[in-house]
Length: 212
Length: 212
Image (cartoon, rainbow over all chains, first blue to last red; front, side, top):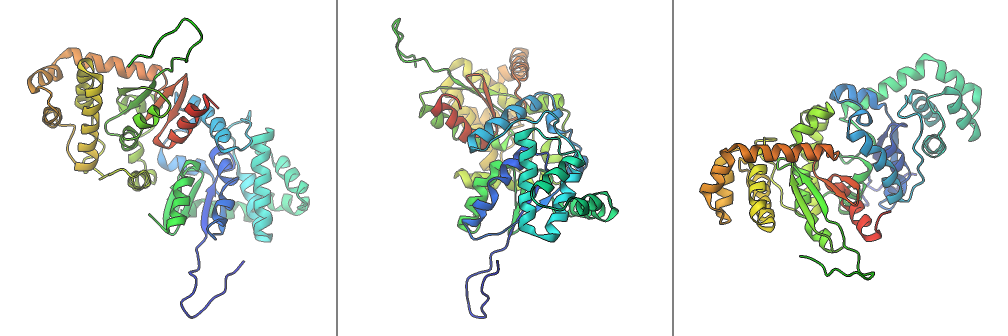
């Protein structure tokens, strides 16, 4: 994971890309399928941060996009078309959007144990919701998904019902807002922010050119 | 302009792309610099439709994006970065956003006389605003820009102060809303809608593949 350090002029240590997402965000799901491979092509790590979009919408004062007249209909069509365009499986979930606290907390719990395994859990949750219509707002569903990846069910169930993990997520959401994160997916690298899966080409250009 | 018609099976007549925009929209300006060349590569015409975003925001209930906390700061940065990414000159106007009724009405007036010349006028208005910081909300500025392209000043001034052109724009805005246009730029082709300059790659793929 770490690169050799040298006191001489050596290769610059590349900072990680911060990737913020909400598990109910279709564009966040699409980005989750692409960001690590993209980053790896430029020698970058990606730190994943589950967030809750509801908090950001509250600050912005905007109604939920899919609830807005005109825009809502368009977005449902654009989610599926963008997935086809990017070559990623997508099935519009029946229950949409939904709250994602349990999923986000499960990710934080898993990340403390093993960041790589946590990404595997995030992929499994995203895919369960956006390709298999599973209700990830249901705590049992989240536990089932985690268990299917080999996570012990009892300790996660206990953590999800406790106060510590709730406060932990609260803190993460506050931190994201303080950094200016207002949507999903949202990327920050070298102090530059990119919002939306449709900004991945600009993010890639940024990595390739070291800014532009 | 017209293609040869045949009663036998012949080349399909390709429908035009409808391009909706607001003269105060940075992404609309960026799209205006790209859409005709893109369409021409696939043998498509483009019909330009000036609209007023204020009407769409009213329907959606959303506050103006650049006035939203967090998002507003991001957008100012993204306008300029998107322009650099696309290789298009861009200077953030001081007065932003502003109302664009005069500009939109001048376009409709010019289009009745000559659709091609109207596009030239639209380019000149967009560039005056987004590269030279000119106040296109000022009716004299719009008249100056039109005059610089050889449009007679007096008849345009008269039309801009009359009721007919105002009703004409009102009708255009209502029509756009009725078709589901809620942002700028907004494209419709073969019944498919594309919102945003960042959807041009999908629009191009659509034209290349005849849908996807």
